[in-house]
Structure formats: C-alpha cells, structure tokens
Length: 234
Image (cartoon, rainbow, N blue to C red; front, side, top):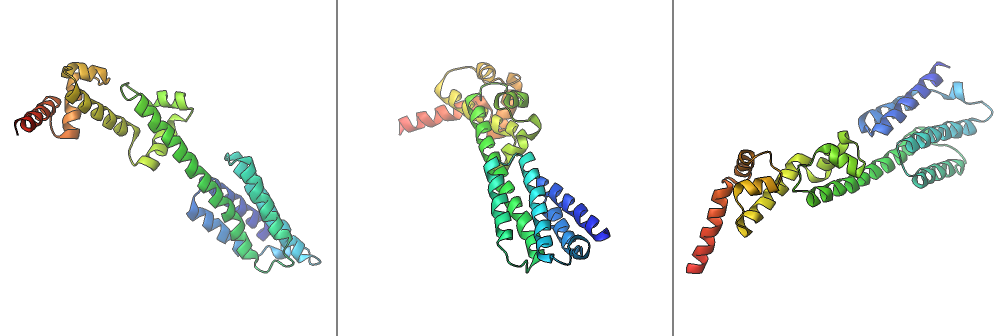
C-alpha cells in the first residue's frame, strides 16, 4: 500500500500547486505520480482497465472540486469534468496511463490560467477607468478596493500585470497630464493647480512635475507661451 499512499499524497500536492498555477511544482508532482507503481496496490487483477479509469476519474474529481473553490465558473468546471470523464470512459484500453496523468491535470491548469488572466485584465481595466475618472482626487488603495470590491493586497499585482506600472505611478502620470493642460489652457496659479489636483502641497507638486517633465510647472508654462508667440511672429 506504500506506493498507493505516496501516489495520493503526490496527487494532493499536484492539486495544491494547480490552484497556485505554479507550473514548475505542478509538473514536478505529476512526474512523481507517474513514478509510483500503483497498479499492484490499487487495481484488481481481474479488472485492471477499470482500476486505471477509476484512478483517473478520482483525479478529475479532485481537480473539479478545487477549481470550484478557486472560483472557476461552474459551467467551465463541469464542462472540463464531463469531457474528461467521457474521454476516459470511451477508451477500450488505457494504453498510456502516464500520458493521461499529464493530459487531464493540464486541461484544468490551462483553463484556470486563462480564466484568471482574463479576470485580471477585466479588473485592471476597471481600476484604470476609476483612476481616470477620479484623477483629481487623492486616491488611496483602500478607496479603490472599497469601490471596486477588489482586495487591497491584490490591486497593484492586477494592475501591473496589464499596464506594467504601479497604481501610484499611473495616477501621478494622470495628474501630470492634467497639470500640463491646466498650465497651457488656464491662468490658474501654480498653488491653485496643486490644490486642484490634490497634491500634498505646492512644493511636492513642483518637484513631482519637474521629475516627470524635466522642467518646473512655471517653466513649462513659459516655454509654451514662448512657442505660441514665436508661431505668431513667423
């Protein structure tokens, strides 16, 4: 029974790493499962084929249960389960047991990975839309979390996966773009623009703008006015 116990232990580990989408360790425990000689312990000599199928269906059951817990939509979960079970039951003989031990888990792995990636993209776009609408405000992660019902801890991970930057940096970029527009289309004072865009204070606004644009807000406005005057004089 030693090999059978090891097989189920490895199967449980495989399912854990499936849930984490850790491809390296997921593959490792699939290979450990393959290395176990379970047939003598798990399968009856009178019906080896049925025993092989039962082991594979048990793995499908484990993966289906875990997929559901990880949030994979019910219809996707059930579809993979029914297709996998049907494919196994239609086999007259399980000619490549090791191959099935890899094919079935990866069917679940790839579906969960694709679903999570799509979920991240959808959530990332919602975060970006929220930032654009509220770019004037002094937005905190908890504000986004409360509004969009996304855990505060996962916000930057989700956002960076799609946009390649943190929420704070992206929000700063939006504020700088807003500042440029205000500097070139209004006569608002630097202090007023700083307040309007919810910077901590005027000094921080000036240093942030200078870092992003290579010039201070005042110099940026001056350069813009000089360009306009030069065009008119030509």
